[in-house]
Image 1 (cartoon, helix red, strand yellow):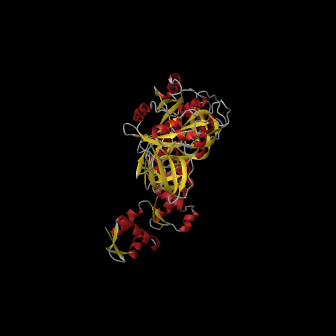
Image 2 (image 1 turned 60 degrees about the horizontal axis):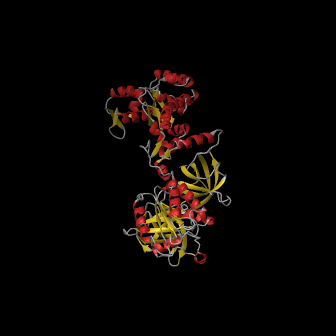
Image 3 (image 1 turned 120 degrees about the horizontal axis):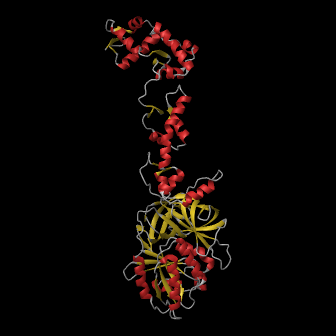
Length: 588
C-alpha cells in the first residue's frame, strides 16, 4: 500500500478529485457535507492500474484548519497538490507549499482541476514552476476535471509512477504511529487510526502510549482485517489498555524512542519568514500539535521546551508555526531538525554560546551525541535514534574517544594520589575512583584499568609491585612496627598481646598496612609475627619426633597456645604440616 496526502487552497476541488478517483466520500462530518468544506481529515483509497493500492489523506484547505492539514501531511511521504484552473495559485496554495517544503516532502504530483471551466495551461505552468522551486523536483503535472472525468485515467497512471518512485520504507524500523483519530466501538473498545510510515505492527504486539503499555487486539488496513501490516500504510488498531488515546499522541515500540519535553534543534527559516523566532510557537510533528517555548542559540539553533513530552529521534523534523500571526502573514516560520533529545543543562556563564557552537557543528549522529554526553549506553543511543558507531568500551557503554583517552590518563594519577593520602589502605576502592572520575557505572572504572594497575577485591592496586617494606609506612607506624620486630627478634613466636599493640598505636588498619608492606605476618586476628616466621616454625617442628601434638609444638616454639593453635592452622593451609588425627600433626 502507498499513502498520499492532498494539499492546496480551499475549494479547489481536492475532495471532489479524491471522490472521483476512488468512488468514496472522504468527508466524514455532516457539517462538511452541508457546507462543502473539509474541516477534518478524510480518507479514501483505490487500486491503481498496476494493481498497487493507494490511500489518500484528504486535508482541509481553509487557513483556519492549517493545523489539521499538518496532522494529515506529517506522516505521509508524498503529496497530490491541487490547483484550480479557474483561480490559479492562491494564498493557501502558498501556505501549504511552504509547509510541505519546511517538512521536507520531496515527492509529489500536480493536478490542475476544473479543466472544464478554464484553460488549465497558465495555472499548470505557474504551479509546476513553484513546486519545482520548492524542492519537489520536476514534478509531473496533469489537467483534470473531477466533474467530467477528464484526465483521470492519466492521473491514475501518473500516481502509479509516483508511488513506484517512492523510497522503500524500513520494515524493521521501530514503530511510531501518530494517532489522527480515536474512538470507541461497542463490543470492541478503543480504536485508533493513523498512517504507519515504517516498521511493522502485528496483532498481539505490545506498544507504548504516553508511557503506558497497550496491546493490539485487532488490526485493520483499508477496512480489511489483517494479522500484520508494514509501513507505509493506513491502519486502524483495536487497543487493550488503561489509556485514553487522542489525536497527536503516538503509539511507539517500547524502549525505542526518547520521550522528552526538551530538545535542541537546528533552525531553518521557512521561505518568506524572518527571524528572530518568537518566544512561543506551536511545534508540529506527525499528527501532534504542541505549544513550545523557544530559546534561540543564534540564528541557526534553538532549544524547544514542549508543553508535553513527545517521542523523538535525532533527525526528526518539527514544523514551527506561529498561530497568532495576522491574515496574510506567513504562519509557518521554520523547520526544526532535532539534534539532541536529552540536552545538557546550561548553568554557567557562556554555556549557551558554547552550546550554540556545538549545535552548529553537530551532525545528528552518535559521535555528536557522545561529544556532548561523553558516555551513553547502547540502548540510550538507539532510543535517541542513533546506531552506535563503534565497539562499546565496557558492558554496552559507548564513550567519546577523546573523553575516554583523558580518563585513561587520569586514572593512574588518581590512584597514586589516593595511595599518598591513604597510606594504610590496600588500594583505592573502585567506588572511590568512580566518584573521583565522575563515572556513572563501576564497570567503566574496571575497563579503564591498565597495567601496572590491577583490580582485586574491589580495589585498584599496582600489579606486580614489591612490598614497600617498613620505609613505605607512615613514620609513626614504621617506628611502632620496628619496636614489635625488636621484641620478636628476642622471642620469635611470642606474638605481642593486644594491649601492647594498642600501646604502640597499632590497630587493625596499621597492622594490615604492615602486613601488605611485607614487615609482619598475620597469623590470625590480633596475632602477628615477623615476616618469614612461619617458615622458621616449620623448620623447628620438622626436628620433633613425628607426629607431634599442639603442646609439643608450643614447647618447641617457646610460645603460648594463643599463638600455637592459629600458627599450626596457618602451616596446615600452606602445606608445611598436616593433620594425622584429631590431636596430632606431622611435618611434610
